[in-house]
Image (tube, rainbow, N blue to C red; front, side, top):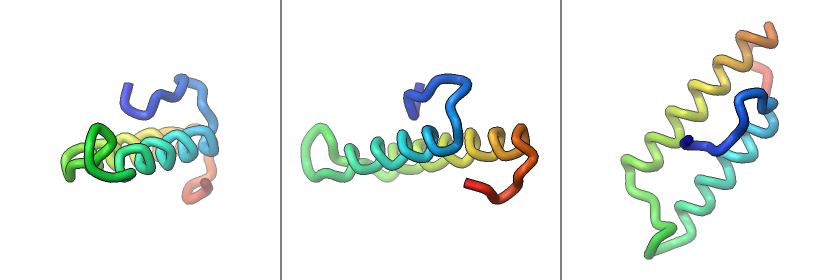
Length: 63
């Protein structure tokens, strides 16, 4: 589980989880430091899940 959101999470919950994970990874050196691969994986997961939710809700572009 990349973003740690339940299957029925709302777009707002998905975005909040994404922002939290990005912030956690970018806090600085050490365990929280983000590599480019990790950030790319988070970005891809967020965009994929968001696109699915938008299609399901019938509101393209809505966040």
